[in-house]
Amino acid sequence: MKQIFFISILLFTAGALTAGPKKHHMMKDKNQDGKITQEEWLAHFEEVDTDKNSFITMKEMEAFHKKKAEENKDDEYSKHHKKHHNPEKMKEKMKKHFSKKDANGDGKISKEECLAIFKEKDLNSDGKITKREIKKYYKKKKKRCKEKHKNKDNDDDDDDDKKSDD
Image 1 (tube, one colour):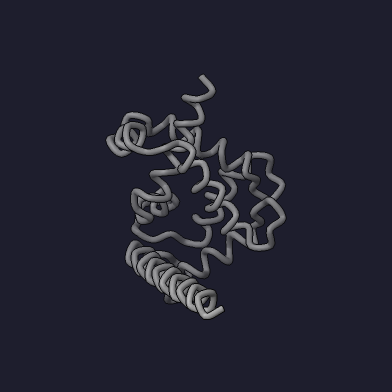
Image 2 (cartoon, rainbow, N blue to C red):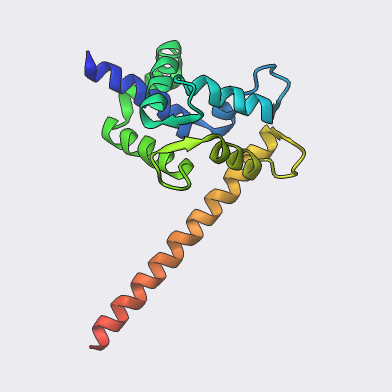
């Protein structure tokens, strides 16, 4: 039973992290007008912060994702992930995702850290995040990631060259 519970959490997280950032983010759009306001963003924070201490812990995030996984267990995406993706990799993704949001590394996400994420994704600084901004944000992020890995690979090649010169 524990394994099923854990897989459910991972499936929802997998959907949130890989299915498409638009879908994951737009669930925060409570009035479904195609825009996420700062108020809607913070309402989502409050939903996840079950002990209402103005911080989200990994435990709270896992509980939230478990709840959402149960609500969405029959959708096609969840079925696909259950069949084709490694739960351990998904667990690592969830931890990595959490640690990226936890800017100061204290093991919890504060409202301030949450708002910083909102502002980073509100590309035109109008106080709203649209599907288009989310798409642009992740496109830029993916490009930066590719460049980072390319540069790392080049640095590794340089290190190999130095070793062969010795």
